[in-house]
View (cartoon, rainbow, N blue to C red):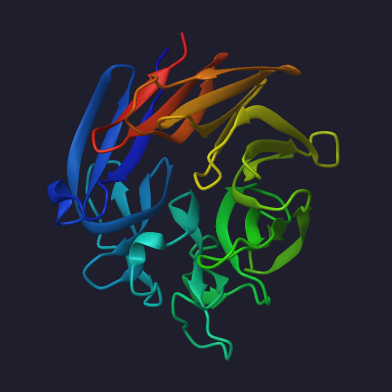
Length: 330
């Protein structure tokens, strides 16, 4: 089975092998892959693509600025656009997501905000901001949440040619510091004018975090971690119904979801007695099966992405201090 992957990767911050914060571009399928250095230096926040190219939302390490840029299909790297200068003193902890269609994009990210509304320090709570060109005009940085609890970990999906062409899922609650506090999931429908209508998505349990959302047809699929277990939910029946997996999840590592007609795939990182491993579960029809997608070794194996095709699944895994690799179910 061949799976085309467009992926950008940055080596771990602070390692001797990546003192320049270099970001690389990978493309390939099966056992054939290419790798090239990009002109960008910093921390990858999110990546997406459409037929016109690959989009990178990242923090520029030199200026601590949030930027969006693009690699065109002919291999040209663009200069990109500045989105925000309020990423805090350490841009490696930035959270955000981006979607694209027809050569245009929409990005959502979090920033620390002081009680009076001015840019905050890393100890201040976070709110969500957006910028976009979908619709044809650049709309610069705009705040889209305002709440007494922390908002973060946003995930976006597109639903073209609908009244609300965007789906946004994020976490409300918790914090980056101090004792754990309760967190829930919020869901919002976005219109082409940048407005959002939001509602609560998940409140069960104590700690709901790291959502990932996909849309197929009229159905929204979401996965996230709740209290050390990965959960999947979708509204195919008209209301959101959830399934909690038995295999444990590393609460602080985002799970991933991917969907194609008749095939749903969820992947997550499993804590073991000695390390971490990547696990992938598939639903064909109404039945779930699952298996480890990485070997049992002492080196950390952290799931980065999943994709379904023709009844099989592929996982992209980061092997800590070693490599980024793709493995396909056989």
